[in-house]
Image (cartoon, rainbow, N blue to C red; front, side, top):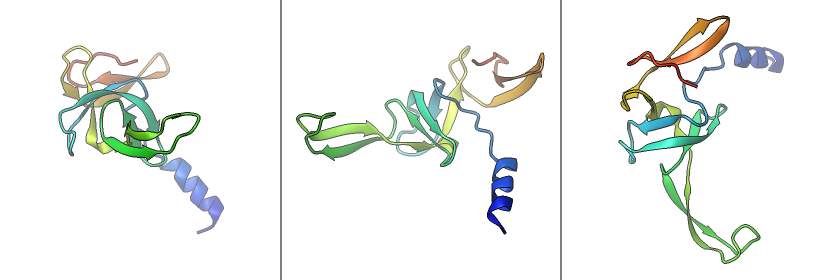
Length: 118
């Protein structure tokens, strides 16, 4: 398969992620199961998201401009999107996300309550 064909396939079959930056999500599996946090960043190429307060890792940093003293720093590491579920803004429970077209625009909504998401 040529590189041009690969690019076409990647564009055609690019997955649609239900989670966006700024959403409140709940971890449904893994070490941090049950923890709720806000999405800081979504990486569509790897299918991972950075969630506030979830998947904390310890990093040993040398002194630099960003960390003048250096030392041990706790940071959030990306977590797979399949382990996350959106929290319904109305009920506060985890819910699936649906999409519908309203006035020519695609709108995301919570499947449990029907509430539209931003």
